[in-house]
Image (cartoon, rainbow, N blue to C red):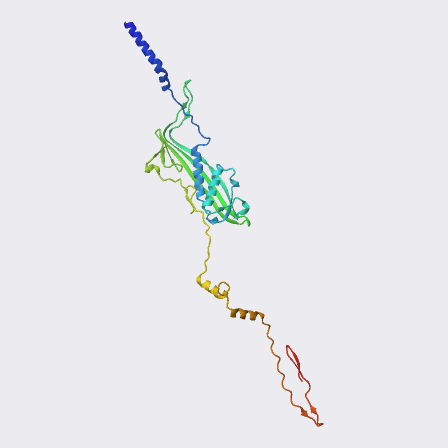
Length: 328
């Protein structure tokens, strides 16, 4: 009986194992996540774009406000992140009130830009034992001493140097130049006794540890991400402009001018008095007035001569500007 009972319990546990075994194997499995990196790190791209934003925001295009401008970016062909630099400069021109023209021949002023530097640099500081290679005295033993830092600091720097000038397209005369404008951005990482990195810089919102911001006022410092310069809005700030609306202008004459015009032209509707029309017609159809001829003086009376015959004065002819009349 005992043997039958043990065999029965064995079969029961075996059946339970066959049922739960595959489920336990599936429950003990694990998964993996595939992670990839871009060719350029996010820190490098943020450093460059932040330096460009600050440099462009320091440019003041106020002298070209309201002018027809053509932006010539041909001297930025070999610049790192050329598209971002060109778009930032065009945005700055528009924010300053310039009227951009896509056709060079339609613009009055040409704006040219060049870059002296758009790139990154880095340096580090270590307090402790650096990593080094030593001769291997025992075969099979490692020949490198690992880095043992007490404190470590890494600084990455982004720099941008731009220069812009403008000239008249038709005359070629100079109009404006910005001079060289330089701007820098940075990212700093700090390790203390193996704890870190503590990250801060112009591309950060504050001091971060393991991707989380630390709300420590003495460590966070000042946020210098926003660029400054000029009266126009910097390219790093949000702004909205209203497009001017053209309203038709209606000129209403004053009542006094209306009364004076009616008095000069007569009553409306073309009705005039008959007397005024008659006077106008008579004035327009009358012939020019001819002045009368002067009246000649009377002739002297005849003087009798010795022979008894009457003797008269010689005949005289009187003339005027319009008629000739004999004087006898």
